[in-house]
Every structure is written in C-alpha cells, then in structure tokens.
Length: 98
Image 1 (cartoon, rainbow, N blue to C red):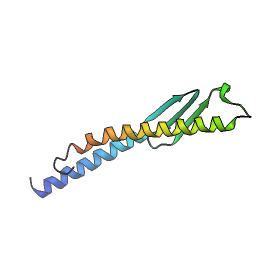
Image 2 (cartoon, rainbow, N blue to C red):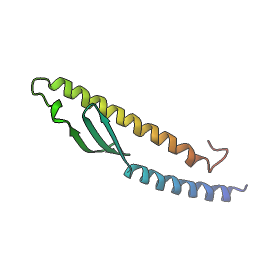
Image 3 (cartoon, helix red, strand yellow):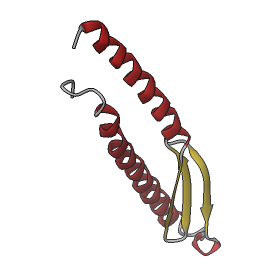
C-alpha cells in the first residue's frame, strides 16, 4: 500500500470516527437506581434527574446525596463502557495501526 492511499484511508477513518463520536455524544443514557432516575448524554451532560418523592426526607439529606452520587457514577461507568465498546469497531478499518 502506498503512502498516499494510506493517508486517504486515515482521513476517511478520522472523518468516520468524528461522525461516530458526534452520534455517540448525542445518544441518551438512562439509569434507574432505588427511586432515582438520571438521564445523561454520551458527553456525560445531565439531561434530567427524577427523584421519587418517598426519598425526599429533609432530615436525611445525606442518604439522598449518597444515592445521587452512586447513580451518577454508575451511569458514567455505563457511558464509558458503551464508548469503549464502540471505539474498537472504528479502529478496525486501519489494520496495523492499532
């Protein structure tokens, strides 16, 4: 394979990866955990948080904070895993580079 063809293939792959990244960033991820529902984009931007009214206890704010923190962290882990799963597919177009 000549260098010019390799460069064209790299540009095509880069353009394809940018498109896939844009699509992934726009994707929505949702997690329900013990009465808390959080929705984020692939960029890890929070879209919405819904909390079951039974969890809102003014005298136990710490428990609510803990549940929010756990739910947000779990959702970010899911997003990271989904991104990791999609990236090897993108690199497959360039054998020998990865």
